[in-house]
Image (cartoon, rainbow, N blue to C red; front, side, top):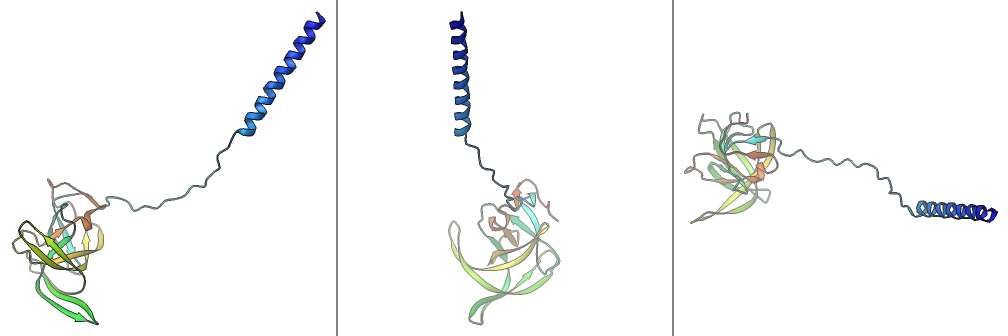
Length: 182
């Protein structure tokens, strides 16, 4: 009986030793993840203008009255109908002067702008090379400096065309509505 009791004690000691060894091994090999400090990522809020329509008002600063502009998600760039267009050179750089007249109320303003680049505009049966300038515009609650190609848009209903260079990331366009911006 004593042998059996000794054997049971030895078995218990061996089992406890094995459990302790296994626990010790598992805690030694367990890898704890390193704590990484939080990083604040600052991103520009998307679609700050919300849902806009197919036609919206835009202000060409410093002019005081809005122009009705066609919103065109298919156009990469924006375009503007101008008159009295003249090219000139200032300090060795190419510049243009032009008059912008709001056809709805007659307000006009003469602009002088440095030429940013020229753009090759392709349509079905024609190609046109246009001068591109930067314009300050108020669109909704934002003031934006954006590129506009200067064109003769007399045959178009709207004096201004707003392309993806302005609306991308700022608005979602629903062509079924209009004049959502003030």
